[in-house]
Image (cartoon, rainbow, N blue to C red; front, side, top):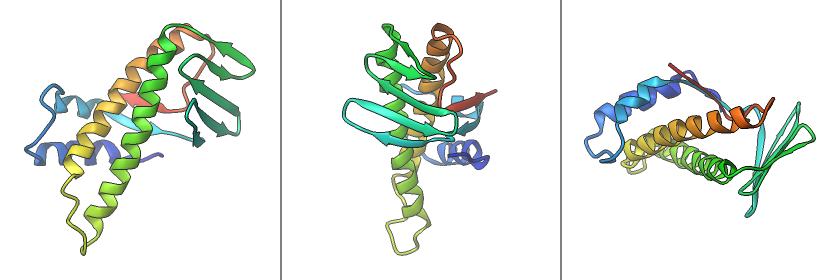
Length: 148
């Protein structure tokens, strides 16, 4: 999932949509420079597995297993939650984008909300990732987020 248009699209949709989340500052979306996910993803009830050339990363609410190492801390549950939220929001954003592009559909009426939710999920995950990467020496999140 790599798109140079993602930040611009999110920013444009957010400004064009009047109904935004009340507790989230949508202007923060301009901080997003890019998001990459160079892994195949498998979501199960208890864990998310990222399969890539450099090996598998398995994230559950209890632990992260990567590069033959295991990390457990109180922060892992929140990181797992933010990853799950990001993947759910990305799926919703994709479906709403397709709906908006379909001239026979309802015009993607939910695209603005989906973009706001996606942006918030990216920023939330960026914060949680920073905590985990500081705790788990040598760990690099499978979702690579670049902020301004």
